[in-house]
Amino acid sequence: MVLESNGRNRSNSNATDHSKESEEPEIDIEKVSQHSLLSSANLCSFALQLRSVYLNSDLNRRARYPNNAINNCKYSWYSFVPVVLYNQFKYFFNLFFLVIALSQIVPALRVGFLISFVAPLVFVLAVTMIKEFYDDRSRYFKDNEINVTPY
Image 1 (spheres, rainbow, N blue to C red):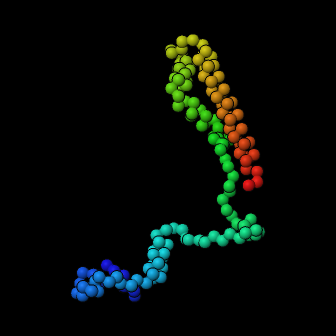
Image 2 (cartoon, rainbow, N blue to C red; image 1 turned 135 degrees about the horizontal axis):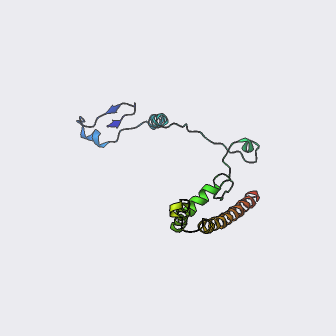
Image 3 (cartoon, rainbow, N blue to C red; image 1 turned 60 degrees about the horizontal axis):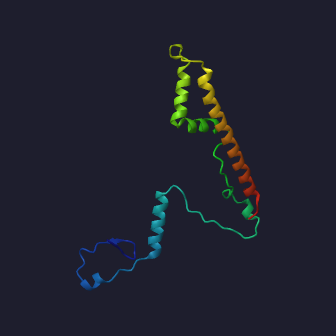
């Protein structure tokens, strides 16, 4: 199928003149581009918007552009404890000590004092949480230091 300049489709199968068949038909570029833009606009849920940037103007400050701040923190205030515990219990030995400590609650499975099983696990988790808190806080301060420096 070939698009003629008037926008209608015509088939090349019934062409009888071989000289016309070798010529390329003229295509109205404006109509084709408008048609493709309209069809792509119908397919997409968003509209094409042009952006104007004015140099040394107050209009740029009023425009809502994405923030260019750096944030390398791993945790937020509400995700710190769950994420650290998940990362620690991914390791086999930490999960093993948790299961052993939980098994000491059942009187039939108790081997020794409960504190002798819980204390090492709590100590390892506490040291890890303190280290992660210190690292994330230092990342936060370094990010703020970089974000306030002028370009």
